[in-house]
Length: 496
Image 1 (cartoon, rainbow, N blue to C red):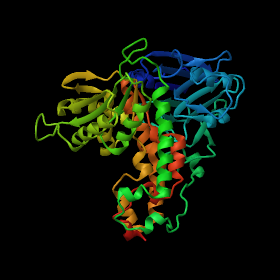
Image 2: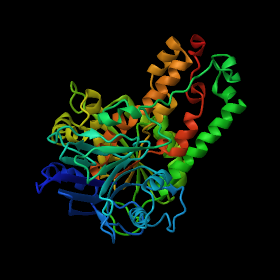
Image 3: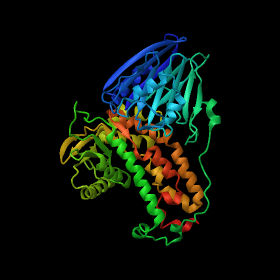
Image 4: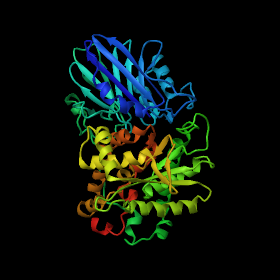
């Protein structure tokens, strides 16, 4: 993961915003950091990059300036290309992208060819244009503030930087630096998955689309059976088993890429080691349990996998950290030990006293969740920040995970109907309304969830990876009818 920042300010004014978020940018990318300045048609441009090494044989510094003076700030993981590239996936994706663009390759073609999460800032020196964008699922944070004479683009902000907004994950934005004012021109993804009903510049509102499709009454034979259909009967249903096999296939591929494409050294070591390099945000629920089980297939057998479980002190009962998630994770851990008896599982119990919670919330977390600010944003932000820090106790001893990579079940609830309210919508309004709600929730996760979660988790210099949001997995799940995506028995009869 990286912390990237750029500013274009009319005249020679020094950029003050960089100082407010420099610490957060550095924590996102603790391995290498540098800056680069250029003057462009009356603008003073500042580029800053801080790198966490996760791909290639060695880290590549940023900002990456090519032989023509083009400047690349890249924050992402490339798992595959739809273009024929002259490089290996083991090479630095920063260099591959820069070389392609320097040799005259199309920005739009390149970005639509990438499978993997990213945000990008690219200054084309010859054309005097700036490109800004996030991947079509919006998995990596990028914020901006656009005014007539100033543009700020950054991975992470600060509450003292006003009017920052999430860069919409709907395409690439092109700024003509020769124009009289900085206005983004949108090059929209042809495969855009998302509504644009959150804050974007007024000039772009006419690109609003919907991805809702009409759902007719289901004729699937599985729904014609008894509403008390049990699991053993489900496992004899051909269509159900076919979907399960496909789900495991796509999710396994996703987990494999996200556990094997990383350095062989942990955060604490310079060379190959047998310490944990993969940690999982682990509630013990089905989404994190499945990630742990699949990760064990691909992580080297002599390495442990760290399971991070956070619990907060109950206000009315000092030093009491018991909560339902803690008991669930203990039960799930026993299942994992049974299924993977040779794997060393490190359960990290992360117990957070109220005093520390309040301090970190004020000093750090409120700035990371910004520009979001609801009670829910605060609550989830605190849980994710402490969990991804990975500092707690393992087998009764103090322990901090050395893992560079965090796996998270983000997106599973939106894709597979994990929220209780989906049941109520189905019961009251039927399949079409449920389908619309699933699509609406998924369309909002770039602005409502993913940017915030990326900023919070990566504050500890770890790479957050989200296997449920792999492009191929998302396409498969969203291609299923809603009654094939979630468990609807016991209340389905009320929805015909």
